[in-house]
Image (cartoon, rainbow, N blue to C red):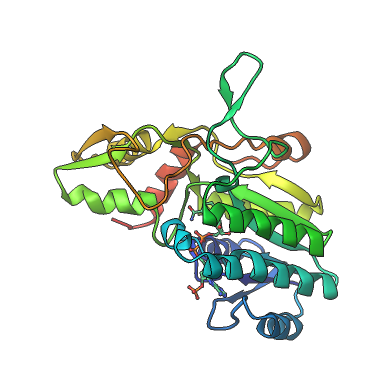
Length: 289
Ligand SMILES: NC(=O)c1ccc[n+]([C@@H]2O[C@H](COP(=O)([O-])OP(=O)(O)OC[C@H]3O[C@@H](n4cnc5c(N)ncnc54)[C@H](OP(=O)(O)O)[C@@H]3O)[C@@H](O)[C@H]2O)c1
């Protein structure tokens, strides 16, 4: 039986992998949070990896609070970059592959123009240009992971929701109000952590190392996502569209960060559900409101 070590086991993706684990009888999972090992410390990473002796590592540990990261560059760098590098090095030392989930924030959100002058979703080969500390530290995490271990899967995802703090949950909490203001000029790819977990495990089995985008099919604005959540649940709270300028946050989010699962589509049979279907499954199976 093969053993998969999942760091960040208490996070959204870690918990989704935990739920998926039951479907993989040939795999044994070991989940570690920061209590078991602080990935910013090489000694703790080494101790964990040499103790578990896994056949693969899925590094879900991350500093994901985008606003907090902006004011805490060192903290974000330690987890998203240095820690990622340590795990990749340890994986290399014992001869196993590493998975590093990354983010749409490695792009600047201006989009890529296609031949018709229209904006198209980002592909894996498009130039990165992160505009936030979070995005920069994740981009460097991608680079270190890849540099330290040729057997890597870098998997960029976006607008993730699972068990934990996320946009979907925030909108559900706001349903107690009569109205909620939601930004309508930011477009992305809402992705269920469960869909991502399934894709990661399938990719890991494939042995096809590389850089992948992995998001649910389709795209929408945050406003459209909020409307869909309430519509699917029959909630009557009125959603008011606002601009990014009308809803200031510490960090300005990318305006357009739709990802194209180009490599997955071209080189594998792995497919993700449409975001509306994945959302319906999430709302039906999680009593999150
Ligand atoms: N959330 C999103 O919208 C989003 C979007 C795109 C990409 N991603 C990427 O997807 C991946 C999973 O994100 P997520 O939403 O599941 O994250 P999350 O829910 O914020 O969980 C982060 C995990 O990292 C662990 N962690 C933080 N600092 C650590 C440290 N120093 N040592 C060990 N563990 C540490 C936390 O453990 P403790 O709880 O024990 O501290 C927690 O289990 C990340 O790589 C993230 O960058 C997320």
